[in-house]
Image (cartoon, rainbow, N blue to C red; front, side, top):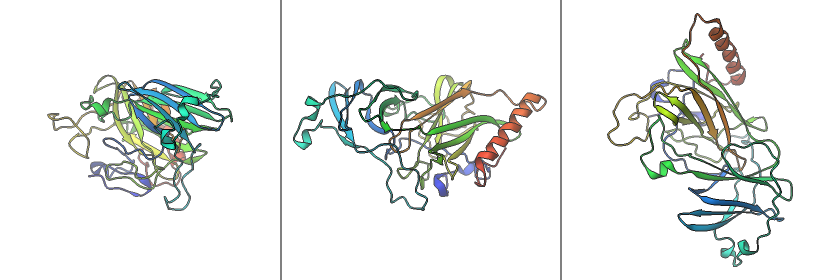
Length: 335
């Protein structure tokens, strides 16, 4: 089992003695408020926004058409400075009836005032527009629930494409990611920080398996490309940013799917998988509050060579970057 630490981070038992915070989350995550989850496996998706600031998302799932109305939230709150989660994170109000439950079929007379989108580039984009008041709305979709450790989905819910709705003004949340080696070059690692308005994105706690327990925590989903697991993009793991920096550090170690609460299909061998090092890596994370999801993608590393000055220089540089991000935070100290 993974003991839960403060600041919303959990450590795998077998790596507790490592000072690098190796965090993982398993299974489906309960959606509190984020670039808000509104549907799964949606098609024929359209986005409209009226002059009152209400968005309408029209989509189909298994042939059923839905006219979803959304309003009442923009951007995100940074984590309260007090150690209390009573101040709730931003969350959109949703009406899946298209107005019928308010005795008025709003969707039939909805006047779209969307202007062409001129905001920042977004990953996984389905549709986006600039509202009459100058704010932005966007729809993004990606496979959020893929199983970890490079396992192919064996359940229908693991294959679903989740549709996320966001509403914001100003800058997007910022995801900084770096790659280096750890433990004298034996393993590759990704590390970095996730911030919004200069403040680390972090929650107030996690479950014993590392899932956020409040509206402020977020999972970073790490995928690996053409890895030891097989060709193409596969999910390596998921973990939370933690501490005041909103930082993370994940080492590519072998993991046993039978240890630590990982979901796994029947009959899979009871032995370690990986490490899942690949040619490329990407991390996707849901935006805090109702801000958009953001994604980073970069090249993987080769095997470390202590006799190669370029490898030594890169490792030294990245160690300095890690220490600069970490500051006085107690985790992620291992180089």
